[in-house]
Image (cartoon, rainbow, N blue to C red; front, side):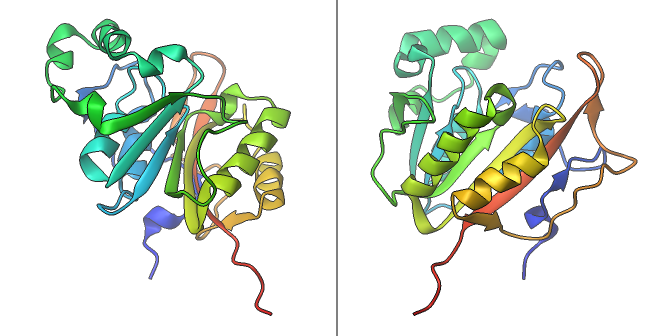
Length: 222
């Protein structure tokens, strides 16, 4: 039986959030404490996972390294493959004392690659789950389409994409269409209305944060 976590919907202020997620998250990261807490609930110990467009200092890949069997992380920023550059960015974004909390060998447990989401350097049917946290709002529709195609190619037949994105920067209807064209469907219930207690940020125009979980469609029976 699916839990409420499988519902694709807007984040609500009452949802669980963890401000200390591997590292103490900056206050300016208004939705990440919610996004990370939700996405982390889908990680299983035997998973082979990808943190797609992982960022450099962003700690979700560090959580995956402690929670999944095999962890990959890619980003278009070439610093993703440079241990020193990553740690420098952690210090800059968080602090020296926060950086010291990371296990000394954590970067060696993450397979990292400089890569665009439109051309992922991984084999077909390789991942159990792909995590894509606050990425789609930075991509135009044509790039989103190619990213979905790559997600479909590199996921196992029963694989999942767990993602979050800003709204209305991302058009949910267009995103659903692109997912369907790449042979994905929602993995659980869907709520598309903005609730009264929706989480939002007003600093750059009102932004809401949406969470969505998709699975690859099963081929029709012959």
